[in-house]
Length: 317
Image 1 (cartoon, rainbow, N blue to C red):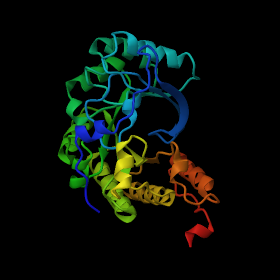
Image 2 (image 1 turned 30 degrees about the vertical axis):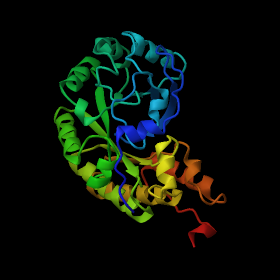
Image 3 (image 1 turned 135 degrees about the vertical axis):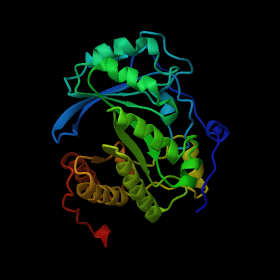
Image 4 (image 1 turned 90 degrees about the horizontal axis):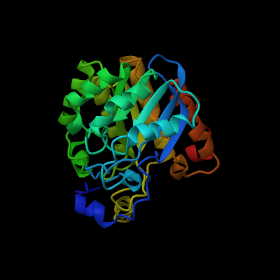
């Protein structure tokens, strides 16, 4: 299968309209359990912050739908955090996800760092997402301000060089490695996003390259691996599907790569966690008899970090 070469023009040509956003409110927020780095099952507050669109128009991304065209006013991000915290139960950790890069000054105003820090200081861990190009001394400044554990999530996606280049992320594996090492050397944990079956890979090679990418991220020192099954839904992915350059992974592949990842880290880095994202996972089901059971199995493995008994179904034959 050919590797599609994507540009900003390709991405923009098939976009729909953005959703209307209020810069003073997060576009979503929730509390969910997650296994912590110490092995406990803790509640994590995730706040999906409303802010300016990410400057990197990645092939697979649909997060731009809930972004603004301009930077939010100073004070808006602390207000969004307050809005979510007032409406949700207590949690041990917080994710400040902003559909882009936390340390991009056009996304999160640096003038707000102190007020953001004051609000998140009570949490055990503060998790933000960021691109290697914005991984600099501002990360260290924010770490010092919050006075608690900082974790930065970086989308490596895949170590397949041609596929990574086709995702229009404008980064290389070396860029990821440099950013991750800088963070780890400064006592900032690294969470790595990896894609299962990005455009240009079939089912078997999608699993294999995801596994090789897990090995690479663990070798660099990532303490958490978050596997993302590649989804349609942003316009461009539908175009790639129609041309035969993309198809969604099967839920059995999601199970298989999670199993391989858990088995690998158990022998190499037992404290490293491997998660499979199950948001809207029903779209990856091909057998209605066992699909719900497979999703539940993945959720159990995410929490236990152990390989759970397989689901028995005729579709396995």
